[in-house]
Image: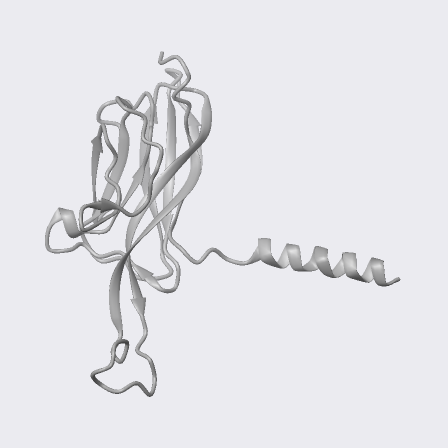
Length: 190
């Protein structure tokens, strides 16, 4: 009886952990369309959590962004952005840094396009933004990576002296890394 109860509690706690919401920005593939010419169009969404916003910054270098690495077979001119975002593709993907050092270490295959969308107008917390797309000539997928730079809001510490660290609410830049389906860089480009 106790073994059965213990196993049931272990199963329930494991399900609760898996069912918990993510507490960081996510980039997800919402749809992949197979086009008449054999190419594939990926549709992405960006989801922020309760404590995150995306800020445009004074310059592109300080603006928040998301990068999908190793988008092999990218069709030139096919990437689309929702309003309030700009698109760029570089051989080496834009990665969050602090004082010139990378904050995350994604696998970035040389000579393979990376997709970067940079925010140009503020994005509120707990928001989903749709409308990111890119087309590839590759029909197979692998588990790829993305990174993002976000603005994390830390609330003021109640009861702290006015001059003490944390006495006032602050914003800080944070880096994330995660996985999502991307075109296989081992495939033959059509």
